[in-house]
Length: 126
Image (cartoon, rainbow, N blue to C red):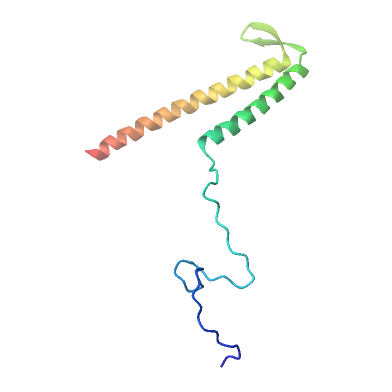
């Protein structure tokens, strides 16, 4: 038998530990779990675009500083051609050309995979 006094049940507008509205009973003294407010802003594609624009501008600023600090000219030779460019500009051009080559190879692969997927989809419908 329990030595605690038995209190009569009291009607309450708040859900009790056995009320089906509340999912789990909480221990005494523990903080109740907080759910996010209904008007919380979600991370959207527009927010991702805005974040990537900010990062892009920061990278652009770093590249401009790099080019401004590397203005010494260098002579470049390629397949009989010869030209002179500032080193910063030459390195930036090489990076851009490398990115374009990577983009073209990736785009060709995506087109190849889309054609294969379309062909497999049409075959599955027959």
